[in-house]
Image (cartoon, rainbow, N blue to C red; front, top):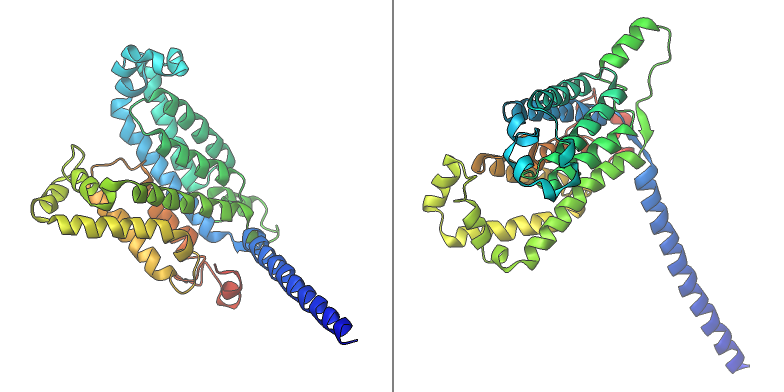
Length: 327
């Protein structure tokens, strides 16, 4: 009898442990699903669309004076590097290359203003893709990052607020129902994941690279051909120990950003550190607006700080519901 009771108690103990583990796993998956598909506010996403459209327009105007060299059939890289990409035989004339840059700029302005928002997004994606296929100088990783952001925006109601589409609809149909403040969170979370995975894998690559861990890569960057006068001034007095500390700080931030930017407790510090990091890059290196720095700063504010309750204007997030749907 004693042995039977011992066996039963052992069986009950094992079953209780198993059920606890299964229950914990199910609860964990349930929290993950709620995080990815729970309702989120639309207004921060619409504000992100406004900023992204302005950045696209700025990049189009920035490329305009160099359109012949970068994208036309008479440009150096198209004529002498024709074997690098099969799209080179589609290179347009200089006049058409300028028209494409104008189209990109106008599409970005329409996207920012929210005029025919979905159509503007499709036009920007198509023109951006074509120009990216022709420009061998540009970093394709940057183009790919912008592609992901623009394509994901296409599947969101990013024109619901702060758009001419919404304003015109209110004028034409004043009796229509008030637009909903919430949306399913999947596409919004995927946008967040785009930026978080860029941080993580960029930091992981830096961590695996000895020249980043010992600071020499950062020191070389500060005196490269893209360095600004401010960057060269910093390089003139910065000791090597400072580069090591900065490099390790950058690596730590990028590797842990996915945790910090989704943590209520540390969100403010990580947003502040991220903005400082990207502003420092823009001040020390002569980079285009179309690089990842400005769009990352925009994302830190619109996709993380505002939804997380860090920046809390009543116009964006009503306090009665904000806590429930914060990160």
